Image (cartoon, rainbow, N blue to C red; front, side):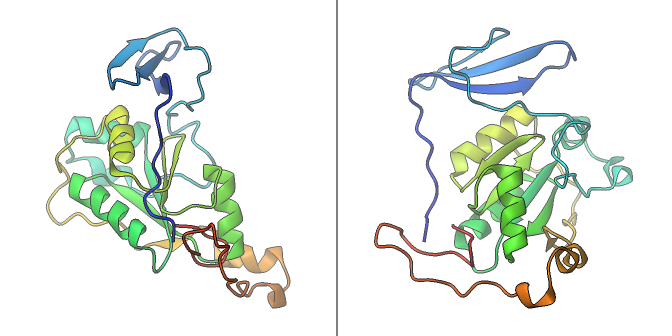
Length: 216
């Protein structure tokens, strides 16, 4: 199966951040030597997507955290969760998903979990994240696919989430729910077509299959 997905830095990697001032965008540039600089000028060849506000995040990725539950949270955590809510996409029997989930829980990132199990879920995952790979997450409008801890930590840092757990003791995320509500899936196609496709053997070049059309 696909292990942790590694992203290589070739030249400058542009990471677009939403600035405090609505009319300005800051760019976080990570050079090949790991040096980080900030500028208000987009670098050539910028490919990153901006971390969006709650008003501009993709449909279907809204955080399920009740705003009233944030009342006792530290201001830094409350601001990050409001501006850049985290939705976590996972599948059953996916060890990298377990690792990503443990990272979010260890760091104290409030998140909403969506389960990917049917072909409808896979198609929706691709719409939201640009791929069929789990684990995945949306942090505001930024999509992250595959799991490499350094990458996830970096995006959470950029969104302003504290490095150490600041959630109230005993806080737990809501139970995972299907990415595509089952009532919607049934309405979208005849019942006979709702069964998952039979898993096929992976090509020799593929480390291994996931569940149905999901890769991890």
